[in-house]
Length: 190
Image (tube, rainbow, N blue to C red; front, side):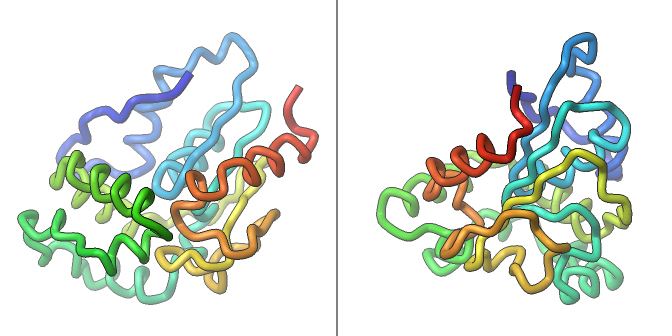
C-alpha cells in the first residue's frame, strides 16, 4: 500500500502533515515505511510516532542537519517566501539533470512529474523542508543515498547506511534494481 498525498493546510508544519498522513496507516498489522526525498522526511516523522517494522529513506535525510547549510540558511531567512508560485514549475533541462535525469527517458519522466505537480503544494513542501528542525533519527531505519545527488549532496547528509556509487536524486528510478537488492540484503524484510 502507498500513501497518497493529501492537501496541505495553510502554514502546516511537516510534523503535523506527517501525522495527518499517518492516520491512513493500518497499525494493527506490521508495516514498513519507505520514503523518497521529501517523502523520506515525512517517513522519518511518522516513524518517530508509530512503530514500523523498518523504515527506508532513499535520497533523503534523517535530520535537518543533513540538509546543506545553504538550505538551512535560506530557511532561516525565509527566502522561499519570496519565490513567486508561477516560477516554481519553470524547471529547465539543467534543473532536471540536478534531479538526476541521465537520459531522454528520465528527463521526459521528470518533466512530466514537474508538469503534473501542484505549484502551491511544491512551495508549501519547500517551506516545510527549509523550516524542518528534526534532530532525532528513528530506530530501525536504513538511509540509502547516492554519490551524485545534487539536490541533497552526500557530503551534507547525516551518515547514510548504504551508498550507491553514481546514484543521483532520482536513483529510485535509474538504479531501482540496485536499491531493491540493497534493501532486501539488509535483512529487515520478513
